Image (cartoon, rainbow, N blue to C red):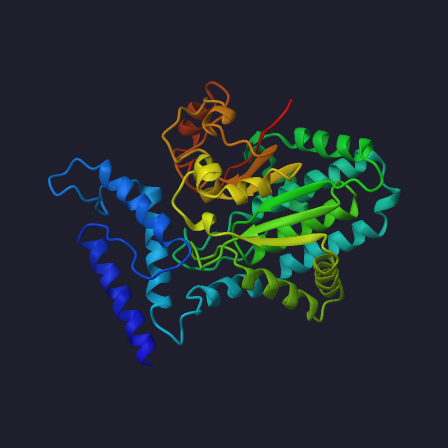
Length: 389
């Protein structure tokens, strides 16, 4: 109880600082990322022109203060043992899983029916199924508890509704993804690795859709292994940690629905066999743009370079890929990445923030005329690829 009181007191202090536009203060609790955070804070200080020379909540870059807020929430909890490993967002993340059961059972059943006869599918049929499961993973990204103040909405993504959503895909590079993976499948030797990495976003329903896609990649032999990247601390309410990753698999495995349970058993086996690998790294919860990764976290950059394709899920990853800058809508994606090219990569996101690049001339104007809030509602999505033509 004393620990809870301490955590609440620290959170109240944080809320007061935020609401009254106080200066942003250095982190105090020593963790692996503390020094890097405080160096970044000093860098922000060097950019400030105000009289006291201190970055404040209302005038600092949004990406920086948003990340800082979640890092301070974590600091309040870790300063309060014995609750220092408590995930303040766990309950809402788990609720999204339970409230999405109907859709989860639907897509797991679809996958199991598909993989039973996957060896018999011709190339065109396999490609269509790949595209379907990519789209399920895309629209699974609609659920983001940091956008809904923690309110859980039912997930209605299912295979039958995909045609209805197709007009809302603003950049569609799925053909390039198929081309890359299918060509590699045709040309690789029997023992050659074909690795796809997925930088995860939300737990709950979205994580299940990512697992479904990863399972299909192995079952179809488009990949021989899939590596997942999650957060090392609770982050942006619904982001995936190692606990969420393992919890979803356990829940699936112990389900009383045979196909959901079969998925859970298969997913656990992929982990035991080393065909699914989970990586945590503190870089994902820093405020840095991804183009700083090779300097700030060279070990992580080197790990990503081992991939043949990287999927970056969701909005926060897109903001960090593009530096959260106010780019022109028609600027090429490759240019906005500003030198971040560890391997061929693809952003899979529904739009929830005011940034988008790589659109056709006139496309943004048309969207603004018909739907002024098109950038922020999660109604539109992209598969945006950067890699060899």
